[in-house]
Every structure is written in structure tokens, then in C-alpha cells.
Amino acid sequence: MKEPLERALPSQKNSLPFLWADEIWLMGVWKNSPKSQSIARSMPELQPGFQTAKHPLLPEDIYGSPYSIYSYDPDPLISENDNLTWVYEMIRQWDKKLILDFVPNHMAIDSPLIESDPNLFLVANESISQKNSFLHPNGNRYAHGRDPYFDGWTDTIQWDFSNPNVEEKHIQILKEIAKQCDGVRCDMAMLLLPDVFEKTHGKKSTYDWKRVIETISQEYPNFKFYAEAYWGMENRLLNLGFDAVYDKSFYDALRENHFSYISQNLRENSNLTQIRFLENHDEDRAKHQFGENSHSYFSLLSATECILLFHEGQEQGLIQKIPVQMIQTDFEKPNPDSEDFYFRALKVITKRKSGSFVFWPDYKEFNDSPVFIKSIQTKNQTELFLWNENHGEVSGWIPFQEGIQFQTNLTDLITGITYPQTKSEEGIYFKLGPNEVQWFIF
Image (cartoon, rainbow, N blue to C red; front, side, top):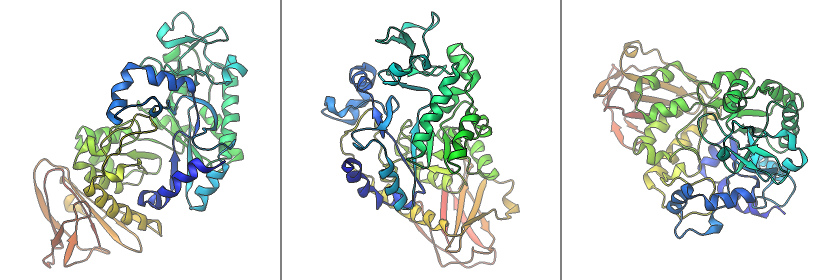
């Protein structure tokens, strides 16, 4: 029975973000935990977030965390089939790739795997507090999944990475997932690193990401591994074989107005091993976090060579963050300015797919100035990005060059404002306010 997801996806497939994307990451497709649902409905600290997103709040609005996975089978809300191959085929027909979640650190506390493989999970010793552990019906007290800086997620059970059989089990799970998609986004991937696991749980880990990735790649050579990663451990995971990792440092720099860091990264140029974003399910909505700068900052991300993670609803300028445990929320009216901006921006970015290449213009006069300038050229268009990384107004001239010639009018993609141009041998005149970004098409 396919109908649940088939009813949802066709409404999305014609949207501009869907058309623009190369890969679609579907979150929450795996069978959810009944215990996670009951815990979410009863946890006092979660209620304010639920009540903000839905009024009146009903029990059925809360479904449980998609990161407390009961089993790697499709959730009934998605499909009643025993796998997601039909979803995979549908996505491929639309010339997209499908990315699904793999949560390597833990399972749900009521997962049937605990009954079938009780020794694969971390039995709590006397050093683990009561709040970070739970008594399972099989008589064992197990540790909750957690990271070293916070208490455990109370709807989860921790895999025991000191047991080499856990790695074998993960390979078995990943081989089944690989039949149904093009890659996995590995939740909190750094928690499995030996020193991190030992810091968190006081035991030596035998788990080897490199061995796991290579084993899957032997059978599925084009399968992608993307890592959610923090704490400066991104390069370690890349060296172990991950195709790309989160770059939260760039997000944090935008949030903290750390312009020198942003400038350095933009000028060095990034690459396709970095996953950059303005919002995701863990962070506040971009429009809420960055306000009017959200459009400018998306434009800066668009000027970098990276994997650009785009969150559903971002193109509507939504500001309400949705707790991951919820499946029904109040309607939020889209922001028309955001809809107009993202329509313009995504339409331009989509044109890059046909024979695009990126080049850095030789603007020597700007090398030591607080103006970031970059152009991206394809056979269809040339894009010009300008960013004033200074706290004061700047102005100057950009020399003409291939792809950037005189035009009577230039329209800024970000604001939609058109600037009449006066022909001059000096090139194109610009004037930028503090932290202002402009994006022009030639």
C-alpha cells in the first residue's frame, strides 16, 4: 500500500525547491517508536514548543522523535510496504537522488532489536546515573543514547561500540538501506569515534567508520555517506571516508556576525565536502534567526561551492520552528517577499546545472579591501556577487571582463531593485551599505 507518501510528494515535486534540488532527504521515514511517542507527550520541557506550534494541542499532534527509531522498516504513515524501493523508484523517475537517515548512535528504547540482540547495547554500570539509564523488561539496565556534554535522550538506547558485533550489525542494516536509496545522512556521526565514545561512556570503542563505509562501497560504489558532525571533528570523518560533512562553523559565523571568518571562507572557496545551511530541523528558521539578512546570507551560500542544504518551508520565509516530534501544526502564512526572492534565486541557480563553471576574477584592487567579489559563469548566464564585509559604506568600480559587460539596467536578485547604469570605461559602479550583499545577472 503506497498511498500515504504518494499523496504528499506529488504536491512537492512541482515546487521550485524540489525542482532545484539534486537530492531529496526525507526525514522520519523509518518506523517510529510507540514509547518515544508517549515520552514526548509527557515531557514537560517539550510542551512549550508543541503549544507554540499548535493550538489547541491534541495528543495525536505528537508522534515521537524520528531519531528514536523502532526499526529500519517504513513507518505506517509513509507506507505499508516492507521497504521503500517504490519511493526510490519514484524519486529516480524525477531525476533526483534519495537520501535517508541512518542513526548510528542509538535505537528506540522499545526496539525489537533489544530482544533479539541484547548484548549489542550498552549495559549501564555504576558510573552511569539513573537519569541516563533505564531498566529494560529483559532485566538489564541500559544506557540511554547521549553525547558527552548533555544528559541522555530518554527515548533511546545506546549501542555498545566496544562490542565488535555492533559494527557487523550496522553493516547489515546499511546494506538493506542501500537497496532503497542513494545515500544516508548519518546523525551525530562523531559520537562513534573511539575517543568520543570513551569520553562519553568510559569504554573503548572498536567501531571503524572507514571499514563500514568501504564495506558498503564494495557492493554499492556510488552510495553516499553524509555526516552530521560538530566539535571540529569534520576533517576526521572526511578522512574516514565520508563524502561530505556539516559545516556548522559557517552557520555560527553568520549568526554571530563574524565577518572575518565568513570572508576568509568565501575567498578560499569551499568544496563539495561541506554541507552548508541557513536552517534545518535542529536550528531556528532562517527568517527568524537572521531576519532580512536571511536572503543576503542565502545569496552568500549560493556563491560558494558546497552542498547546499535547503529546509522545507525556507522558501516561504516561515519563522515557526517545528519540533521534530510533531506531525500536525498550525498553518503559517508564507512571507511574500521571501517567496519572491527564492523564486528568483533558485531559478538562477538551477541554470548552473548545464555546463557550469566557477571562476575568480582578478580584481587586484579589491584584494585588501572589505569587498567580496565573485562571478559564476555558465553557458546561459554570468552571475556577479558583491558583499560589503565592512561596518561602513563602500563604493567603487568593477572593471568589465568576459561575461560582465555594460547593461543599461542591473537588477539585484536579492531585493528586486533595478539600478540604471551610466556607461563608463571604468566599468560598473557599485555602492554597498554595511553587510550589504548584491547579486546581479548578466
